[in-house]
Length: 457
Image 1: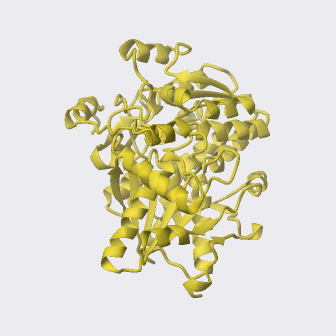
Image 2 (image 1 turned 180 degrees about the vertical axis):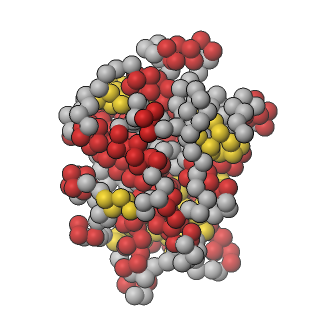
Image 3 (image 1 turned 90 degrees about the vertical axis):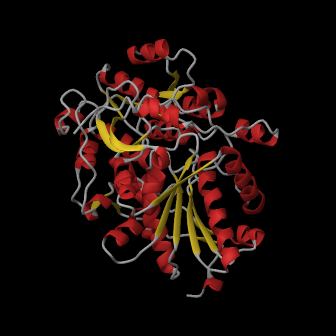
């Protein structure tokens, strides 16, 4: 079908909604390294993980061989409230840039949580309810994951305890209130309510917090309360699995119109949205069926892929979670208080880290003010105010489209618009008032954190 006939928005029918999640690890010849028990430094067992995570999620976390996993009917029913989400041809942005490139974005902000996070939140809440648990604990950076999980827990009548990174707790009060509206308790992290929080505050009394800190507190809260388990909004393989509904829908929509992306772009913090978007395309690449250029975009203030070390590291600052081999800045790295709160994790998904190490994808880092410049440009022509996290992908998509303008190449660019920025107005105000700055950690700062990585053969 010719590109002239492609609509502005491509919607799939309910019948075309994916019925299975895709496990990209099944097609990886070299698998991600196993999670390690922090006490024994041996591969973690299902029994050990079950003390922290729901039983079914443990199975999904450790499954490296099953290519497709059925989505339960209850989850499919919930998905139908907001899925399939639209694939949008950015005609107005193309015109504004004067580029021959064709730009598409998968929009995941068309639900109350405002982001893609609901795709995994409802799955994790479902498995917790099925197991007969009382509630779950979690961390949240920008608040999108906490918002999504509070909604999902409300749907299944589960208690939800959220530890929100302190800087985001202060910068994004309205996300906090959405969580509370859905019944969640929200605590700024690090806090005095947990042993690990008190230790972190003793060492870093003026810290703005980090996702690593919040994870440690949430895990402690889960393991010290009967009937609770911990759930995570990114990084883990189970989360990337649930998020593959994004990529599966996208590929179905593109195949329907005979579209093949040359470049696929996503913002990268822990890896959930990027991993979900690229999964079926990466599967084709791994199987030798097609090739794509895939770009992860991260903030220059927290550059785990572009400046990190590929090594085993703790997934949390308190060093109570399993160790994961990943590109990391060190679990003790305290990122600056940037406005892309969801992209402030010290490490990257083990799956994406392994794919990056095999040079099957690229990574770039971008500065905050340039990201907001791109966000403003996008908002003015496409009519959606993007989340700061998503705007990292927008920035790189614009850069690639402008390269096409210079060369005259008609490449097809796909990026993930992970959510909206209507709760991020303090960030937009800082940009509009000229008060936003760019912080890039020095080599010395990064070395100080990575020098403390655990020594594992």
